[in-house]
Amino acid sequence: MRVRLASCLLLAAAVSACPAPKSGESAPPVIHAASMPVGSPPGSAGAGPVVGGDKPSLPSAKAVSATTPRIDELPPVFVDAAERITAAAQGRTRAWELLAVLSDTFGHRLSGSRALERAIDWSIEQMKRDGLDNPRREKVMVPHWVRGAERARVVAPIERDLVILGLGGTVGGKVRGEIAVVDSLAEIATRGAELRGKIVVINQPMPRFDHERHETHYGETVRIRGSGASEAAKVGAIAVLIRSVTANSLRSPHTGALRYEDGVKKIPAAAVTLEDAELLARLARRGKTTVELSLGAKTLPDSPSANAIAELRGRELPDEIVLIGGHLDSWDVGDGSTDDGGGCMMAIEAAALLKELGLVPRRTIRVVLFTNEENGLRGAKAYHAAHGKEKHVAAIEADTGSGAPRGFGISGTPEEVAAVQRFAPLFEGLGASVLEAGGGGADISPLTKDGVLSLGLHPDASAYFDLHHSPADTFDKIDPDHLERNAAAMALMAFVLAER
Ligand SMILES: [Zn+2]
Image (cartoon, rainbow, N blue to C red; front, top):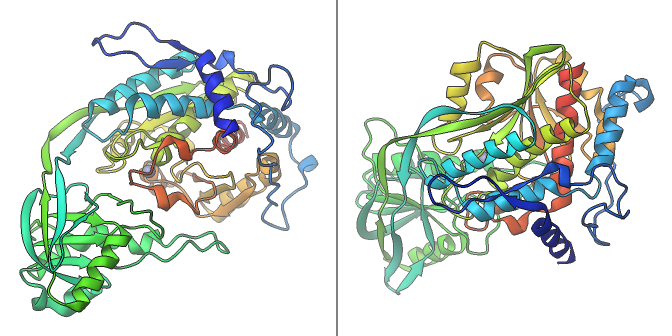
């Protein structure tokens, strides 16, 4: 509690209003990088909010391979940059303060919403204040799906409201019918005609996070969300309710995009909480259970949006690019701090930190805050169409939350991956030295397919899917020190890749 209070006080002192708003809306504050102390040792006078006695000591995750060099065997320019960036991140909370303004001012930012467009404008203004080069919008047309009012109730044999969220892209509609509960996506086809005319409940659990291997089971489980509606429609179901794709729940429903298969009837689809999925399964085991579902969802014509872009122009090879970024859009619940406001603020802060420290690398570092990752990937596609021919030497995406720093996942040739892994000792001071093979991000995936060296920032993701796409994805879950050290790790990795 002390942590947050101290930082909020600092936030109040550090913000100022940006220029008069054009549309009569009140303007959000802009955070001045210059007002933030850089490089002061923790606890020293003027070092900003002391992140308290409960500040975690910096973990020193060990580098991955036996062939990793000692830090003194690495080029001094990188060792010096690592020391300065690591020192600057100590006690600094600017990324967290930026995220507070983003999340509190605009809230969630679904494609097509006014909030997303205002957040894009604010981010560009922020990058301009940070002195980055050529801050700009690059226009992208995005899908515009709106949720509308929604409700679901058990009406027999008991009466009980269910906590739901329509899946992104669902059609609207009102249905009432008997439920049929299946334990997996595969069971739908097996039971076939038996499900005709029913509301199918897919109660497939997502296994808990594997801490030993640091792995989530999201990928295999999320297929119920993507394909459940069309699979159920193929056997004549009238609607589908999926168990939220998360391993843990305090009765939070989790949304996310579905994909209707071409030529298959579009039926209403929503997620229920784990608790309500279990309730429905118990009721159905005892006998006939009837549910009413009403979804007000609509798909409107595509809407103009933009990628928000700015650069730290390289001093020798400005046409060669290291991209850093995340996605600024979010689902329409919570405030999208974890997915992916934090990743975007890391990218802004990473570039600002390098600029402040005078660490301008040989190549250009380009910040890209993508639009429409969640329900279309149009920002990623538009960026690739406009810039895919430029020479990208690497791309780094942060879209796995803002947990404790851990490292990066790297996709490239084995030689490229090994070359990046050699830099692991530089990241030990930030607790981010796990450089593992395999990583990237949805927004940079078109570049990855072209063979661009691609990295995903990989913080501790053990709690990520508890929050992801749910009303619980709110700013209070973000730790200022974790966010800042992730931003610093991104800055250091971008510097290394743009300078080497
Ligand atoms: Zn995301």
